[in-house]
Length: 322
Image 1: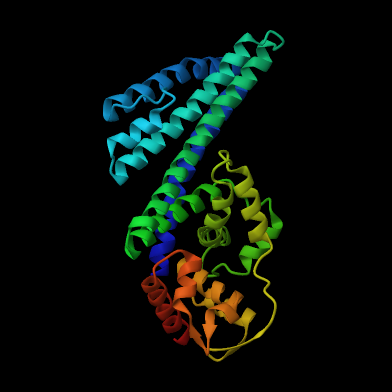
Image 2: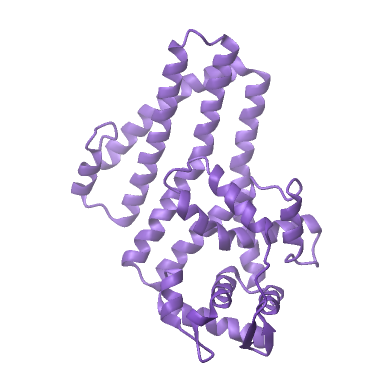
């Protein structure tokens, strides 16, 4: 099960890396031929703005340029999938409009040299490319929130998994354990040693991001469109590693919390199970009652159904007892 999860997470990373490669290609073009790259941005953005507006109007009868387009959307009584698609389209339209506003400002700024103008225009184009991924993540966040309000435990778990997977993949393409030595050291403490070091570190990074990134992203998702604040905080959190205070715990024949967490990592608990296990170990007085897990308390903290917690905890105990 763990190998299947890591393969799926790695495939998601490859998809995100391909998107990042496109940004790198444009950066290279902007560096070698800034005037041509800037001209391409100026030609493309107005077309994309108009195309996005027309496409949504044809599909939903909603004009994104109208101030009251949200009221129009409410009157349509769209289903969940349509709501998410409209949200992505609206956010993309907003990103493009912001870019167009910048281009208009640069055009009338007579103080800019041709070189400075090209640099600013190319930077605006890169911001659009980077924001495209944020638009997708915003949509996945909304989908997860909607699933929590109306869906069952399976729907919630699926929505959380899709959001966490894509978020981990996106951040991993922008996080270097080669440059960040503290992060590399932290990953070496938890990575597998039956694979090449680089691949094993990446897989460990993806697993950790899958668990840690959603909480941080939840703090910044409404404002961090370039995801710089999210990436910085998550990287610092991971670089600190797992250094919990020692404390006696009468569970599964282990005595210390640190030893329990190490055992859980070595046992290869999937990220969701490890997240629950670390949550419980971090505040045993809250989550454990006479050695038994308070399923309802854990479910409220992780925003999942009680049945999901029972299933996760059962698998954790089975794995650690093996």
